[in-house]
Length: 373
Length: 158
Image (tube, rainbow over all chains, first blue to last red; front, side, top):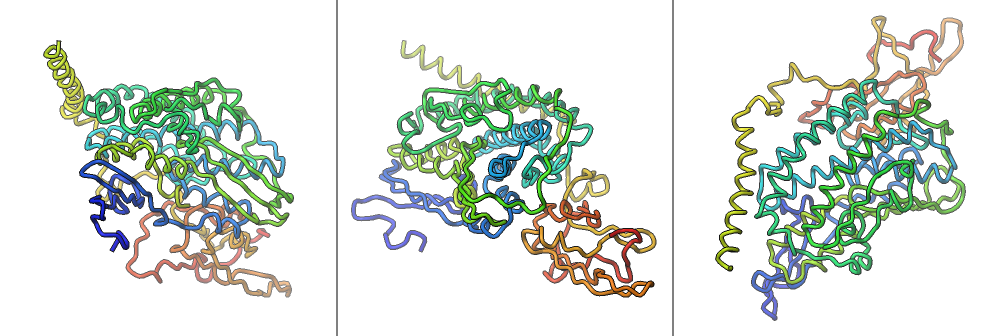
């Protein structure tokens, strides 16, 4: 019995149902227990742990080179950013200077994966609300980005391209040409996204005034990323605490006041263009030189605590490492953006209809493996 | 006023629906813009990039010689324990005993294709291959021995 001890209808006449863990619109194994009064949501309770793999505990038995690859499995759509956070924390502890070429490569690949992640959000948001067609248009561009990842990093999703001190290998010679092709394809097709889904009246009506998250709540619940920026909270780590050379680039932090699902859509659609803008600034002037700094074979971090945060496609990812001076971390803790963003769902879906819960989940854009780790 | 607004909304909705349908209609009458590939049918023309990580391979040259010295760097660098190297002592022509590999066991079922072993190898004895169709009916077939029978270390590789 999935519901546990309670009956389906409790004493107060509330109807208790499960959304998930196998529901297609949860994009994974998220289980939401929903208390309903008719069709109106009275309470939502997320239940976690269906995809817990104890990545934090596993990291304690890995060396500082090995523990990077497993973070690709947390937020698999921002695998580059997760790897970058781990590489940065090791570099910070060892005080390694990352070569300029490696930094440029990292930023290009991270922005590409942010773009592909937002494209996937666009595809799945339409799919959740019943529009199957946008999915295929979005996957056309995503496929092109994935092909570049395959050519450059050797894998389409779990790339494992970042190492402490730089990147694992140099770019292939036709990399700038391929990137320009993809960016041109994306910019030519961007108007189709607006025509087929964003400009659609049915989609807009299902998004507007649904799941309003105020700025105060966004701060109180620890929301970050596009979810918080849609509420007007400035929280872009790339701007506030620049890392890996983001301070040299010109880009805008997208801020929308409104806080509803429609605002979250607008933030993501605008961030796609910002990612394109960042890549275009870098692609013609990737500095020459080394792609990785020289590090020792066995990395040993000095005794102490180290913290580094990066901006993934969904918000702020923090990596906290306690080192006892040996070759493996003593304790490793990931502050994942999706876990904090999930806590907004029970708060903002109260009083809405059950169909609006799907729209809220679509715009919060959760990746379940990142919640459970 | 109300009636005007009411019909205005209907008109706007129909217009936005037609905008979307115009786009889908465009692709309906332009079938050459479709980029979908039919996977099992296109096996012959499937072009995978050189860097694609599908499995670990150990290249042998025409004299059946490999470059693995048995230093076990890959075994240490593997996060999943999918590599096991069994070494032996081999008597060289000059009478000295030297460490050589006996079997290079590769557990494909445990491998996550992270490529750390290839990165750690000091003699580039192993590479990532392009083969990605690994499905088998029994788990035991996924345990592979990479060094070919009768193979030996290439001269000059230390």
